[in-house]
Length: 326
Image (tube, rainbow, N blue to C red; front, side, top):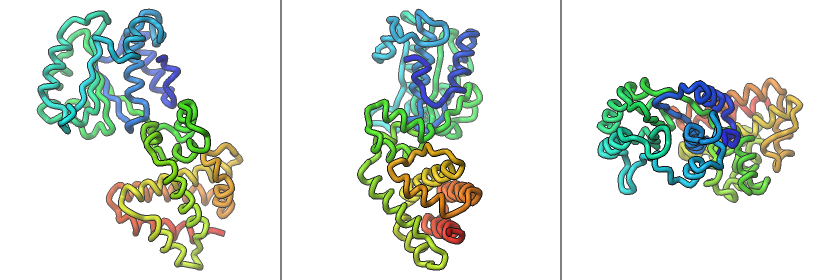
């Protein structure tokens, strides 16, 4: 697959292509980002470009090397993941990897190992990897995939070139879902709730999300500081455990981002199938106030992630939203 098939990471792609053109790719990379944002796809495309027999800084997709990588059967690429009955990647797996990397490539210019997810390496496995990172074989490339680089040993992080992948925008997820064959209405429901992950978008329950979205829109548009029961009824109905509340806040972020877009005169929104409700949200407050509320929702989400009480956090957010609606 060529780099042009990777969506939403133009800056990262340009950095990688520049290193390919200069012949200065790193011995080890650490790709950090939410699962499903394109980390692994980018890693495989980087390897394809390194191995490609036609192009110097991209994958042609048609040469024997590119086809083998697409088919998952290239002999010089090795994927390390937890064994089926284990939670962690073991030190034995890393030692096997070190033995493989020390051998000459079968047919490619380099041997490559992808460790996914890298945060699942046991401490002994990570320490074993450290030795390879400190003294890498001349033709070896190691790519670590992780959702959180902070969970890796600092000594491992410091020996890799860290590349941070931002979550995909809802618009990018929507586009990828449509390209994959999902109809527009269904894609418009799950894209805002994906958290920037195509994988999560594909796993979401479309019907349940539709019902949840209708309930959220109904409650949010009824908030009124002069009818305080609307505030506490909303938080009582819509709050739940931490994951449920974070999902709700992601939904609110999507609604208010669209409301801000409408307020700025941009009619292209993500939640197209509930456009009238989004227009109602945008019309209840001034454009600057909708921007402030968007930040309030972000702050509430961060608080809930840091173990704030979900119900109390929503009480405060909904009071703020109700106080200046018109």
